[in-house]
Image 1 (tube, helix red, strand yellow):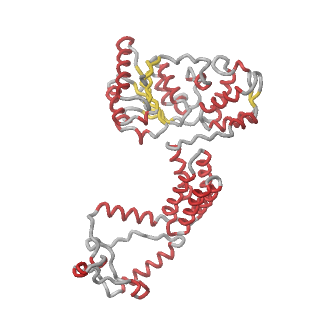
Image 2 (cartoon, rainbow, N blue to C red; image 1 turned 180 degrees about the horizontal axis):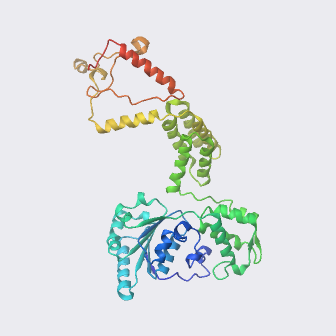
Image 3 (cartoon, helix red, strand yellow; image 1 turned 180 degrees about the vertical axis):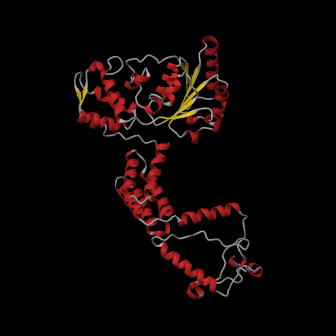
Length: 448
């Protein structure tokens, strides 16, 4: 069975369809939200009014109207609409869509819009397969994605399509949609003459979390449980939502945006914002163990030796989460997050490690100097392995002043630069003292 579907205008919205499908807007006036794109004088509205459609990519979270908007554009432009699912389609399906487009052009003189849902799932070969037909005008391409296009699509395709960012619907847009669904007797629930209490409305809007499809699905379930002429009340809506979660794409951009917000709140020494983003991720269904692992990373990257206890505390929190699970473990992770946010900050170890890795990657594989090599055999000793090595514990203050530990071919580096915060203040003082001993030492293995 082909994954290509071809339609003209909107298909009949049969009564057996879900409410969300029946309530798809048939005109721009019915379209909810996205005023930044479709308001008077806004770029997409202007392009529509001027009849200057172009290839485009709609990027936004689920349920904000990406597919609906693409179909509306096709309707307004009187264009043939062909849909491909990037999950199911292959190169053969793309060729079939091209053949349909050519037939429409030759027989009816109509332009064809190729709509690719979840376009981020197209691999490079699939993207390359339809790119020539976008370039020569055979197809007008519209893609929909929940993922950042700059990460998922190749540059050639991005350069030929304008990216429009669709936003989560605000409460005003969702409320308007809810009212239209309750009052519309042909496509909505108007024939049931239902009402909704202000409290129940508020709960539904919050549970929708900017997603129109989710709002209508919840409303439809609630309506099925209320007799005609009745009212949707708070208790009913609360019961429906007992097992639901807010929108949280565990593999998508929303996921990484929220862990980024948590990490940056910790770095910014704001325990309250850090707890908020932690709670948001848990509320969305994120695995607490993933957060615990990331928190351990934060301890080394953001605090380091300014407070070495941070790493131990985070490891303990991870261990508690593994042993006890939720919700007990989440409290331990929250404790670690608050500690990190309040701790003195230092990225000195993080920067030093990256600098050392950069040197190693860009330079030859220098051998350890002979005096640092192990000499377990007679031959190795005869070759000079370990010769002249100074055992630090036999030196004054357990420090071999003037000793050199870098390869002979590499000038000594100073990767680690302690900051003037927390324990690193004392570490810096200690290193300064040792370097002064080096400067005073008569023993110099490396000579200028």
